Image (cartoon, rainbow, N blue to C red; front, side, top):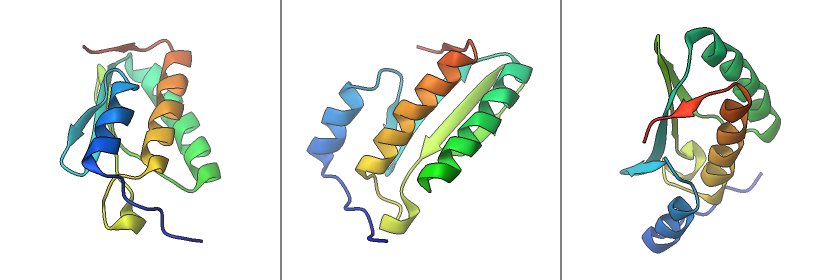
Length: 104
């Protein structure tokens, strides 16, 4: 399996513009969702299943009233790649299906 190519700062900025709520922190993108605890647990199970299928995983931080997702491509030296933005889109869809309200 080939190592994904890191994106340039310009490419990252362009892709972030298409993903409202996601923010760049160095070589990661992150988003916090306001969501009830049990709904977040269900979302995490779905995220884990979909991530396994695409062989790309997010770091997930579950709290009582929110879920934070952080993504980077470890195989690309902890840099951002197209795979990160595709996973972010998938996570947005999954969390929305679990009735989350993203923080602004």
